[in-house]
Length: 425
RNA sequence: GGAGAGAUGGCCGAGUAGGCUGAAGGCGCUCGCCUGCUAAGCGAGUAAGCGGUUUGUAGCUGCUUCGAGGGUUCGAAUCCCUCUCUCUCCGCCA
Image (tube, rainbow, N blue to C red; front, side):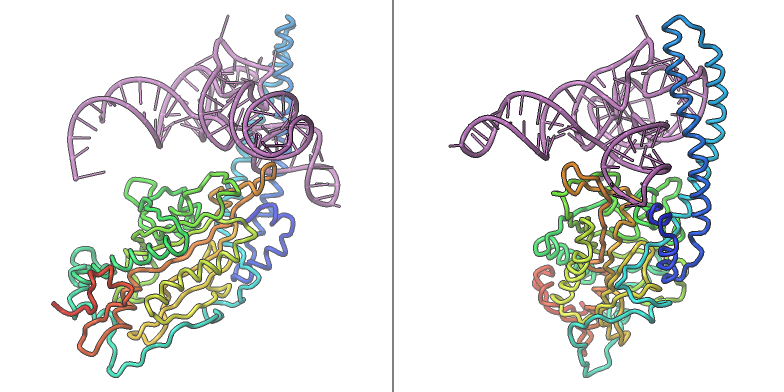
């Protein structure tokens, strides 16, 4: 959520920023209502002031044995007006809230301006894509061939966009989860969290999934609860409605969770394999930090995500998203794209964002910079550290051998009971 | 599922025969004093949101807020209704 006062103080500047995200005129209605709000607010407050002082007067008069009935009648009438104006005000404020909740974050000045992902900027590459002396297969062939991924039975259970992992496939998924959590908690200073996988609508509002993207999520029948589309939601909302102490910052938290996405509007895209699923696993990184440190923290967070790919020996590139490709809550985002031989291309495996105070304002996460100082909103960051299913897909494709077997990356072997090669059993 | 108790400021915790309680007291924190250092002690200060005033800050000022929403009343933390959450006991259950 944007700062209403900031918009009011300089609407043109904010409007300009929003235009970079292909939005225009988003503020007109806000400015109109905002003006009206202050007008009505003035009236209500004046009436309330009268009521407050008069009520005290009534008390005094009664104590002194005077007859306050005339004043009481006046206040009673004022009360009726107050009720009317208050209802007006409530309607206006709901309107403002609705507008504000639907406006995306402003892009950071370092973000390239462009209409869509074509304007994204590649920052760096790591690792060399392997040269195969045979035709590499895609993971949706490798997996079933090894009998470790089963798409047909998954469809029988749950329909399209689900996968059953079997044997060493399941083990590999679990190995990657544990490996990632171990690295981030031991080497990168994150605290492991195991959050609920269902959360309230308030949480979804706090991180920006609601109210705009309801159709992307799975809602629990008969309850105001949703299956989390990413652990970013529970992790960031951990501190919702809290005032943190400066000494508690920064907070680094990480969690493994399954993620549930309706994938509405992506029919026909990535229908094969485990790249785009209704349910997938992810290890997420979230940081709650002091505002002045957040861009430095974004670089560090991105480096943390990169590190696990490096340890796995998976080639990747880092892409800075343009204004046209930026997510709703983000001010700046780096995507990590891993090399996938089956696609002969890089595919997104992580997205690391600085949301600045956008989520903090929605979720009301604040901190006191120093004793006696005014409290202010924290900055929140999140990043995949990284997607598990896509990691497994990348491992299968990058580490496949001519005979159809897959070499287990060395760092994962301790998590696989020492297994070096996954072969068909 | 049944029975009961509760929800107050950064934290703990008073406060119901409705008014002078934004809210006692304590802790924490800040500043000052005291002190060889530390500890202890003494004094003062210390909620948030939204407006107005101001170039902006500070300051001053108004309104709101004692889980949420609604009601009664001239006036509600205090009375009534609904809801949410927490805790205890019983039952059931992984």
